[in-house]
Image (cartoon, rainbow, N blue to C red):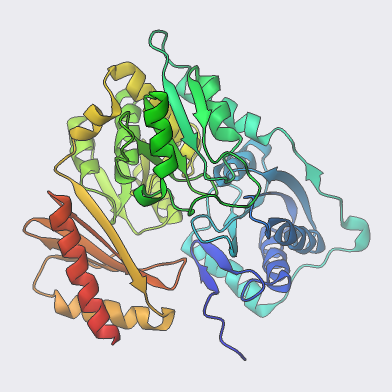
Amino acid sequence: MRAIPTLKISISGVRGVVGDSLTPELVARFAQAFGTWLGGGRVVIGRDPRTSGEMVRQAVVAGLASSGCRVSDLGVVPTPTVQLLVRQLGAQGGIAITASHNPPEWNALKFVGGDGLFLSAARGRELLDIYHQGDYAKAKGADQRTPERLADAVERHVRAVVEGTGALPAGRRLRVVVDPGGGAAALAAPRLVEALGADVSAVHATADGRFPRPAEPVAENLGALCEAVRAGGADVGFAQDMDGDRLAIVDEAGRPIGEELTLVLAADEALRRAKGPVVANLATTDAVDAMAAHHGCPVFRTRVGEANVAEGMRLHRAAIGGEGNGGVIWPAVNFARDSLVGMGLVMHRLAAEGRPVSALASEYDRFRVVKLQRHCPAEQGRAILARARGAWAGRPLDLTDGVKVRLEDGWFILRASNTEPIVRVIAESATEARARAIAEDVLGEVGRWLA
């Protein structure tokens, strides 16, 4: 059988290049396996606007229906909307059809349990066992139903965020620019800003599957947003990835402040409302610890991945949590990485402080993060990490996820991606130049090991 290097099956779900590794047959089988694992019942589905989305949706519906599930279709919506609606509707589970930050030729299935959370590693293994065994539940024709279309999912999501955060206080009216990247939040992001009581304008807000900028909301991809903030004299700019779970922030001068500070600023607002533990993954900035210490709250670290962070949040009964990729999880509204929740919390922080974004971000100038990556065949990932454990054995190591190394003036983490055939290096130090030097040195070693 021909190897399929682009197929990725992990805690993040199953994803691949459409027409190569991700075929309608494979999608339908995974949906059948999921329906079998659930034991039937109501399943909520939603998708991002990728051009392959309708084909994948039909395969998902076919697989779920054939295994005896009743489908509630939300259409094109952010992934956290799917998670929220699973809980609101009391569904048995959900499937988000999205490849998130991957390029347009990719698509994926993310599986959601009845609690609205992505499947844990243990539950994911159960699903995979059913998929590989191929012993699926089979509904009779009379038991299969036409999918139910729910047209108000975005309105429900916006209403939940507004009710959870409250409308912005009276006084100075914020001016906000949003950049959903032509993704699933193209409708939800501007609606939320308006509903909170701020003025909004948008760039890249047409969700037609033609992504006008690269999918990840990192600084090098936000030129149009930065220019729109400057030209419009806005107070803040918000950018999202294609499925609307990650959030990046641009300050009032049109400068990206980095995804890492999204969680820091949002959690600062959340902890002002209710104290409690904070949970973040190992690859997230130490600025989280500094912010939480100011509130007298502990920080707990987990493996990378939303399911891992959510599991840690449940364990520690966290007030808020998330990841340094711009993911904010605030259970008070939505137990999911939710860019709309992040926007609401940050806007409230700005309104309450009366200070610009740049001033809030400057409190964490001593934490500078650089993220680099390089291609690495999936089968070589473990060998690379084994070499890394040996190479830095004399340093303080954390092997919870990949290899995290503490240095005298910072830290770095080297890990294989769960979603792409690459290895990532994230480094933090007091200056961007030093953090970059650390990350480049690590990638240099990886290159020599791969040679």
